[in-house]
Image 1: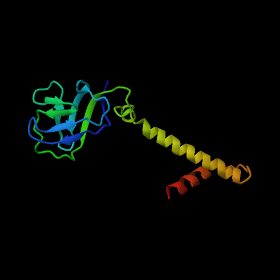
Image 2: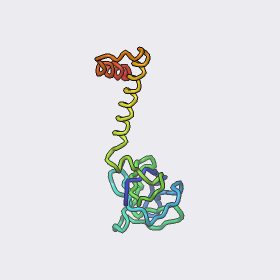
Image 3: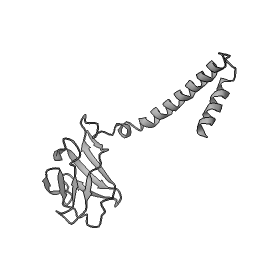
Image 4: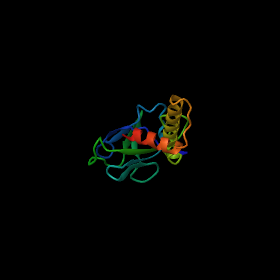
Length: 146
């Protein structure tokens, strides 16, 4: 499965055959697993496997020398790398690929924390369970915001 990888390779812009993207810090990098690289800062694809003018002039170790001229780009540009997923955690972007479940988990954890604080207040009051539990939750949540 091809995914948007969380790995950010080193980018050295240059003329065709001179500019390259270095995947040296990605353990087990295999060029045949690379699908596409999009320079989102410039709004253009700089590598698409098999596409004319967007391939590689050569691959030396972990460096992919680009056919597309990136001489007008900068090394600080943001690159989106689409890569064949494996079980390597650095290659996967599961939170993004599963429809933003990280946000749902964070909301659940926040609600759990509020419930724990409600329980602590109730225990502190000697288990005098009040009728206005919803108000207590809202008060605790407002205190967290400040």
